[in-house]
Amino acid sequence: MGNHLTPAASQSKLHKLSRQRNGDQTAGDIQRYFRQRKSLIDAALDQYLKSRDPQISPLLHQAVCYSVLDAGKRFRPTLTLAVGELFGARRSLLLPFACAIELIHCYSLVHDDLPALDNDDFRRGKASCHKRFGEAIALLAGDALLTEAFFIVSDPALVRVLGSSLSAQLIREISDSAGMRGMISGQSKELELGKCEVTEQLLEDLDRLKTGALITTAARVGALIGGSTRKDLDRITRYGQCLGLVFQITDDILDEHETASDAQKGLTNYLSVAGKAKANERVQSLFAQCLKEIEPYGQAAEPLREIARYVTERKQ
Ligand code: GRG
Image (cartoon, rainbow, N blue to C red; front, side, top):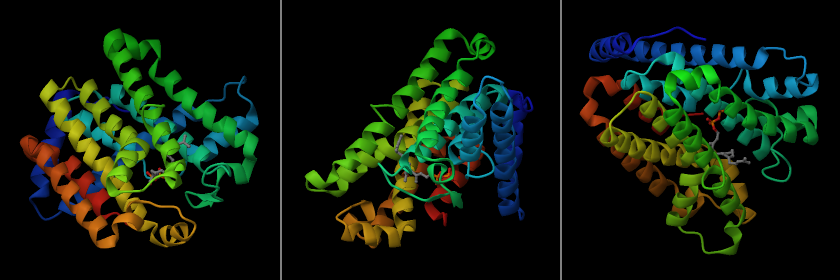
């Protein structure tokens, strides 16, 4: 597993980074910070997925690796690392959870692209999993990714270090946000949108589940592993909730052309209901809320500030 970083070293690195943010090389430093986190996550994902267990069907293995490796922004696992590091969590404990959350995200993309749902031919700049491997294998690859996430975080060696109570809490939180109280419910509600009057509030509630739940959990997991206080956990939860909503609204804005053609088919999202000006306004106000939540952490929260800024201003 990746490099160990002790809580003290992690904090001092963050403080160093924060001090640098006031200097001249700020943008470059923060980019380096995120590039480093992404490489760590990519390396850990490689390690988890590339190991060749002879029991794994070669075609399934290929489809799983195809759907996860060598692409994706790794936004959710980066968030787990950044929050965890703020609270001095050990990176070796954060990485398995960060990777598990990314696997769940990848599974949701594979299943969402299937003809029964979004019917997308392309994902992450290449053919979607079902286009490359067929629907049956794509369905199984998604199932395998979801299951593998829980295999990784229930590793007895990890549970021994975290303690059974915290391990159970983390696993339950992840199941809760990915499952029928979270992401899946959001997706299911979206399928039913045509049956009722669609308001901005209704869409926000739906987006909080479909996209926001896993993002909020990605942040909370970092805080929980770092042993944050209840008050800090509540702050990070609110930060994650606002961030999740920003993520989905900016996604709707980025998909403006798709949104327009969806609207002709009677499909709605935040952009088509609220309009671009209001959607942008909402993004800015949520961004301000994100910043407010992490204000008490001062310079040490600079990576979280940059994550919020990145999501607010993102172009992809
Ligand atoms: C079908 C199980 C299932 C769930 C459906 C999350 C979801 C619910 C579907 C994924 C499709 C979608 C448009 C979700 C909204 C969230 C979103 C913008 C996902 C794309 O995430 P990025 O931009 O993708 O982080 P990368 O490729 O960078 O990881």
